[in-house]
Length: 229
Image 1 (cartoon, rainbow, N blue to C red):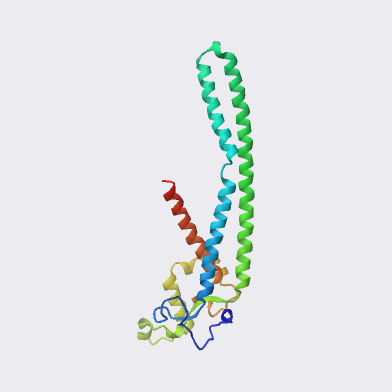
Image 2 (cartoon, one colour):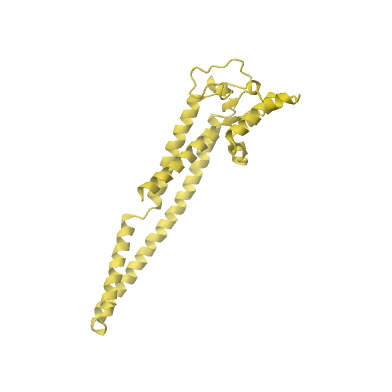
């Protein structure tokens, strides 16, 4: 099964991969189909989360109507107040209506704030559950790993220094994806379960999923800013 490939593989099949030719990126393991699946899933998941958050954090139609009604009442009350004592009765009625509408609007705002808090908690739980599912499905499987035996470094070759294939692969990987490989705990978590000799020169499924969410999130933000101009 393609998900059970390891760094000990002795043969490489590059014919069905979507990545660049191995002479450019000397990879020893690549799961193109799974990478594409994770990228698509990350995009759809991020879109669903943002739509759900927008739907629950936006003001309801009732709140918008009450807000407009309150602005109208305040305007009418100010007009009557400017007429002086002759419009005292009408002014008093409008001021009482303003107070009642303000109280209703405050209740609607409190309900929206509570809804926002519930939404944030639910999204946090969904993110945790989704991350765990992705990790379990691809536990111990590297989506892409570098083959250190095919990396030639002229600087290393000129120094009579013996460098292992793992160190070569790690150096190439860090240089290729700098500064992503130095993001600390999150990056290490995404490689949990992968063989220790491969962790320094490979990417796990969670990292691919997170990359898809981050990239699509930035795309959505740019689209929203462009549409709101």
